[in-house]
Image (cartoon, rainbow, N blue to C red; front, side, top):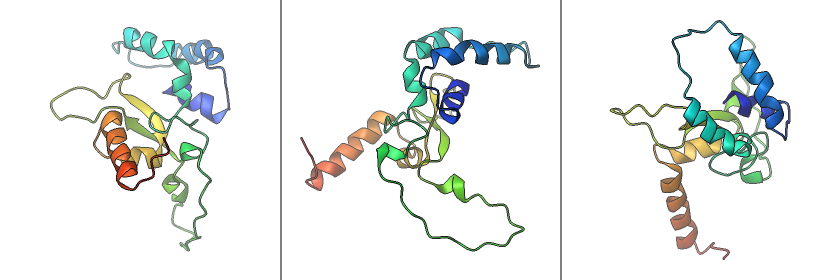
Length: 150
């Protein structure tokens, strides 16, 4: 997830150039040495590194707008100066942590293999469903509205 954010915030196209500096940074952190990073999962993820820079649902780069759609204009809203502004968190393209498969109370799936960064809109649209279930739903909606472009 760190590679996703660094690649997105600094516009890095080649994620390979990030692996060593980010790894070195993490190795030098004062973290609990009992924590074992899931190296087998990390190896699988790093095989398809470019996906770390993409939203898992719409497959657009994390710093771009959702599904590369035009950005919408939001009306300004008054709020008192003393109140913390969180408006940017509500933007469609804001980045949020999302799960590729929904969390299950009785299972440990909040893992490196299941957690990614994605657009807020994409995350909200998935609710408590997997990417496959969400895509099936979206396909159905497109078909019943006669908007299928195939």
